[in-house]
Each structure stands twice: as C-alpha cells, then as structure tokens.
Image (tube, rainbow over all chains, first blue to last red; front, top):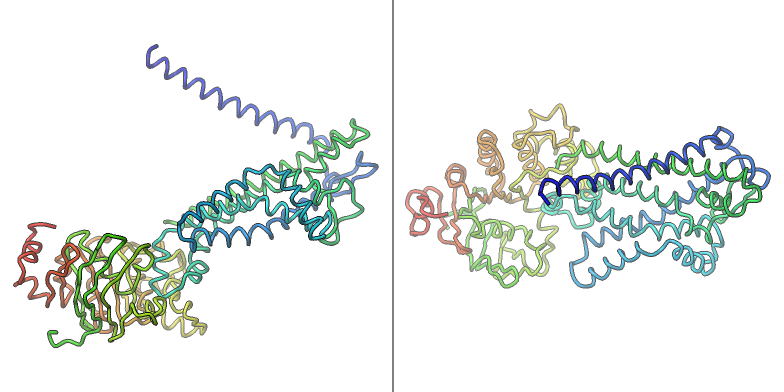
Amino acid sequence: MEKKTTQSLWFFFCGLAMGLVCLALGVIVGFVVVQGGRVISFEFLFSFPRRGMTEGGILPAIVGTLYLVVGSICVSLPLGIFSAVYLTEYARPNAFLRIVRSTIHCLAGIPSVVFGLFGLAVFVRLFGFGVSILSGSFTLGIMSLPVVIASVEEALLSVPRPFREASFALGADKWTTVKRVVLPAAFPGILTGMILTVGRVAGETAPIMFTAATFFARGLPRSPFDRVLALPYHIYGLITEGTRPEKQIPLAYGTALVLLALVLLVNLLAIVLRRRFRMARKW
Amino acid sequence: MHGEKSKLGIHNLSVFFGVKQVLYDVTLDIPENRVTAIIGPSGCGKSTLLRSINRMNDFYENLRVQGEVLLDGENIYGDSVDPVVLRRRIGMVFQRPNPFPKSIFENVAYGLRIQGWKNKKAIQERVEESLRAAALWEEVKDRLHAPAFELSGGQQQRLCIARAIAVEPEILLMDEPASALDPIATARIEELIKKLRERYTIVLVTHNMQEAARVSDYTAFLFMGRLIEFGPTAQIFTNPRRKETEDYLTGRFG
C-alpha cells in the first residue's frame, strides 16, 4: 500500500476513535440533562424527600455529600501532604522508599467496594463509630489518599531546586524550607489536585454503602455520628429499592444531574484556578 | 600570607563524591575584607570548592571530605558545628538569580524571619538597608510588595545579593553571579562587589577571566581539582609563576 494511503487510513481510524469517545460523552451528558432537567426545580433542590421517596427533593442528599466530602478532605489532606513531604523531601532514595511508593500506587488500584468493607470492619465496628459521617469520611479519605499523595508529590517535585538551595544557604533547616518556601510554591498544584479528588469522592457509592449512607433520614444530620443521605447512594436507592418506579426513576435522573453538575463545577474551578496560578508564576 | 588577615583557612581539602575525587589537597587562605576570585576551566572543581565553604555539598549522597576549612580558626567540618547555623554566617549568591516566588520585600526579609525576627519596624529597616547596600533600593522602593519575578534578571540578582546580606553574614560566596546577565547588568554587579568588599569577605567563582581581573584582589587558579596557583590578582595576571596558569590565561586551553 502506498505510504500516503496508510497515513490517511490511520488518521481516519484515530479520528473515528476520538469521535466515538466524544459521542459517548455527549450522549451520557445529554441524556442525563434531558431526563433530569424535567424534575429540577427550586423545590427539588431545597426540600426533603416525601412519601417513600416518590416525591419531594434531595436537600439532605446534597448536604450529606457535602459533609462527606469535607470530612474526607480533613482526613486525606493532612495525611497526604505530610506523607508526600516525607517521600519527596526527607526520605533518601533507597529500596525501602521504592516499596513504599509502589504500595501507595497499589492502594490506588484497590476496588472501592473493598475500601467500603475495610471501613465497615475498622471504623464502624472496631472503632465503634457506627454507620456515620465519621466512618464514611475516614473510609473515603483513606480511599483517596493515593491520589492525594501522588498529586501533592507532583506539586512538590515541580518546585525548582534553586528555591530550596537559596533557603538552605540562608541558614534555614529542612522543615523551615518546606514550610516557608516549598509548600507555598506548591500550593496551586496541591489545590488543583485536591479539587479533582473532591470530584471523585463526591461520586463514590461503594465506600459509603456500609459506612455512612442511608436511604432515609428525618431531618439533616446533627452530629458526626449520624447517618446521612448522599447523592450517589440516593440514586442507587431510588433505582433499586423503589416501589413506584414511574415516579422514582425521573427523580434519580434529577439527582444524577445535580451530582454531574457539582462534579463538573468543581473540575471547572480546578481548571480556572490552575490557569490563574500558572499566569502568576514564572519559573 | 601577603600580610593579610586570614578569614578562611582551607587546609589540605579533598572532596570525594563516591569514588570520584573532585578536589585534591587544596590549601588556600582567604583574606578578610578582600575579593578572592576562583578561576579555572569548567569542571575544575570551582563550584565544589565554593560549596565546601558553606557545606552546601552536604546535600549530595556519598560526599566525603578530608582536610579542614577553618572559619576564624574553627573547623567547620568539626563534630560540634551545625551546618544550618554555619550558613547564617556565610551568605551565598547563585549562578542564576533564584528569588523566592514571594514579594521583593519578603525575599529580603526571609532570612530575618527564619531567625525569628518579629519586630515589623526592625525588619523594614533592615530590608531597606540591604536593598540600598545592593544598589536596588531606588528601583524598587515604590513596589516592594510586587512579585520578585517582575524584576529583570540583573535586578533579581541584586535582590538575591540583598537577601544574602540582610542577615549580615561575614562571608559572601558568589557562584558566577553575572554569568546569566547581560553586559550592563554584569557591570552593575561587579561595581557592587567592589563596594561590598568593605564589609564582607567575598569569594567569587567565575570562568570569566576579565571579571576576575576587574573585581578581585586575589586570584586562585584551579585546574582538574588541584590548586595550581594563588596570589594577588595583579601578579597572577601579569606574572604567573606556573606554566598552566599562563596557558589558561592566554587562552591556550579551557
């Protein structure tokens, strides 16, 4: 076959693959928007479910997801930042460090339902937190650790070495340098990594299934030991436990649309922030 | 030595990175309040020698140091010496300007803050003083809180000098401070070096022989990790004793 023909053939196939991907994405988003858009209203967003989840809104699910996201960040951010600082700034590159790194990478590959079981065994039972926001936050936080550590590490490594050298040469010790120079310089990267993690945590169902979520709650949660409704689990509940599918399935689409919008919004925020910081820094 | 007071005594210094020896038995007395230039071809160990003085080589794995470096008579490689404390006495300016991603003011204040300075007024005064000493004050006094990266390369390097002298070190190490700058910015830095000599002992690494001739009082010629010749700059440049020095200065190699 002639070279030029091969060229255009492969160009066509690659373009086709890309087109299919865009099509799939468009169909999914379009479907959810069209189906869910019918039920979205002020009342849907700001009221409680009524009549066995066949009517009413999803306020407690929105609030619950918010709590879980914030709670999981409180767990994963400090742990993730300090671990990443240890890995990049303190640890000497040796076999042990390589093992730790690959263990963290393995953690990222564990199915999320396994984290759910782990959370059930450890936080719900062993620590006695019960099925609660607390247990769910810990479970989600630990699940997102590998991603947080990886993104913080990347942000720390992108801080140029001369900054560190300048600080050391002025008589700063390692921790002072990390605290005053490296972490502030890495902040934009850490922030965007964090926001992307939020997007993922918000949509997780399996880890909270046994640790935090419930199908029904009277009022909003009042303490960290309460169970909560959460958007992804609410969708699951509407679809599987429903008695009036003709009423509940549209509600599920509405909930899905809210979840999708939240995640997109969060990702958009990450992109905007990254652009702003990238323009501000010049190294 | 030439009737000068020695600030820094480098005695039989050998430096190894793993099995690779970079410096061989270097002995050299650096006089107080003078500019001492270290010249030599690339890879001759100039930077390693400079970084041995404030122990910046400590960050490399497998570093091994023999011999001693005496700062006012005390060996800085002694067991009781904390390199972090040592570096407060020995400032450093790097090859490429490396201000922190902070404001002009905060760059200069950094060394003070990490030493625990809290008094706002005292910090402001010292920042102004340092910027003046680095001949940068007039250019930045109206925008002290602008990011340091908005300055030109030459201004950034003078900012780095201001940052280094804000903590009042005794010695200032400069690692080819003008090599990344244009001729006009270079001239300003050189002028500044000559002025700073009154207060600091300066060690200047350069591969630019004209620069060494213009600003330094003493010159050390380093070749393949060995100190070939050391003496007053005028003598080294007009009447070198060693053939290697003459060959290097006349451009026969390097």
